[in-house]
Length: 337
Image 1 (cartoon, helix red, strand yellow):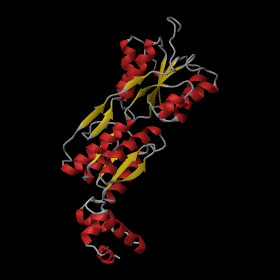
Image 2 (image 1 turned 120 degrees about the horizontal axis):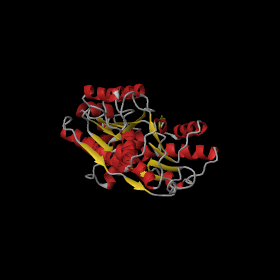
Image 3 (image 1 turned 90 degrees about the vertical axis):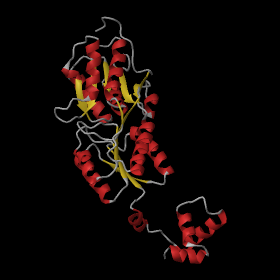
Image 4 (image 1 turned 120 degrees about the vertical axis):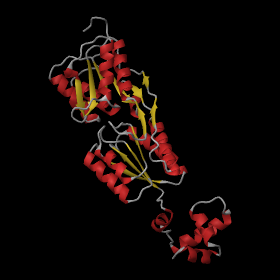
């Protein structure tokens, strides 16, 4: 069964069947119903592979994220889907799990599927997968994690600003012994999240304690295991900032396990402002990142590349972040430490 036979059975032209399949507004309701009834009765499925070969597009965009279970990426994906759906694009979603080899495999897979473009949150700041994207000559946009020494179309937030604001807020509430929990980074790499933390400490002339600078998986387990280790090592701290809100949830769990109260004993500031943050007990003070807008802008930028065929016209956009004050930070009295 092909379009010609469907057209004959429905008593319309091939172009009318094509318009119905492409949801064109140029077809009357009665004609559309007649064509769709025929399609349903004969079990016709259009050959999109043949169509894509003919017009050299698949109407498919690949999206790679490092943690599909993180609510942060749910919101980003909503923004991406909003833009792509309006333009008739489908999404092929891949989960790299912060694994560079897996990310590279997915990039190769998407390239072999002839996707029209790729949106990716890289697994690290020095991703070989992103380097490989240049060799495939596929339009792509990265978001969330900038790439060191690579010029790429990017929609980003300034992670150094996030940690700076979080650390400054704790300092202004009397805290000096502040732990930072960052994600794992490549050896020798200077994390922007750590740089923002150090900047705030230096501005207030607070000594830097290397024991307070920690790396972990950016999730509940990472936050929990880090605080558990600090407590069992009997290191004294009163404040914690985390690379993401899920890690902050882990901090809450560890504090509860060892009978520390938030914010009475430990003040916590998260980063990204997932929906769960305001429902924690106590509600989490955090840095709001415009997650939906990250996805929306990324998709818009990618479609602009695809339509204008200007893959080398590099654009980098940084979105604003803001501190959301809730109830997980308590002011400490002067000289309390």
